[in-house]
Image 1 (tube, rainbow, N blue to C red):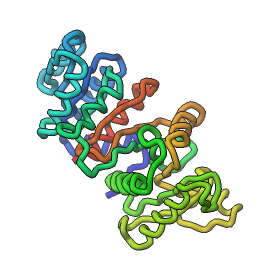
Image 2: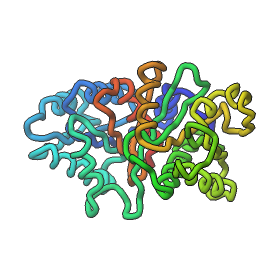
Image 3: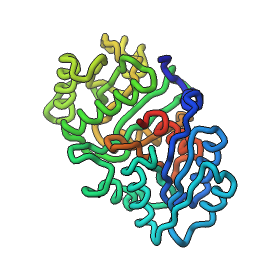
Image 4: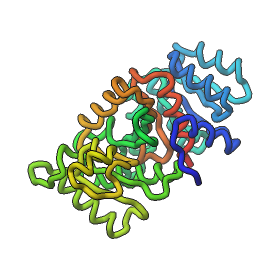
Length: 303
């Protein structure tokens, strides 16, 4: 499979399959969500189960009227009820992807993480993966975790790496290069995440992640700029050619996310991982394009 290197190529790959993914949208009552739905319907890559609350049905019915063959509408008493209904649709296999509309993330996640009726397996680890197309980088760049895990434990780092590698491979990258990000190349007990990095590299060498390169600690510039690695005397297949960045905490991951989108003119997609089906939980500040490509990513990697 040829590696996907741009966001538009994701759309092309999805369209080439000739299959519309079934997407359950919770409270599709805002302009950006409407834009995503209409654009994806036009692209022929999705069909929709729109789950709205009783007070906000107009937009859902308008979309249904325009595309009755590919849109169903469900009405629930409240937004929380709408979230529960949408999660149930995914659990029962009636939808392949769950997407957030105009509902607070906390309310949606309450339904997603419900121990009895939610989408996270008993031993699962919920994390977030973002995918960026940055004008000055030669390929798409994945990174975690910018939205969910504050201070990852070793088990959370491990799950994050495994989920990200799997998604990266589904995009045609047969041997992902994973950079474990820190402010320097030194391992120190003062920074416990660097000790986790040592264990992750050991597991990678032992083949527990399959065909992959894992290296670090290293800073993000070294991971993405070969010249920086040469100056520092670091020789690694990851240096200057990273496919995945693993950040030490949510502050650094989120800062990277916001910085490259604001100052780096990056287009970014994102989704939750670890759940039984992809969950798209865009930020309120994300552009319509970002939300569209987040949906495309989820539809592309969903099973």
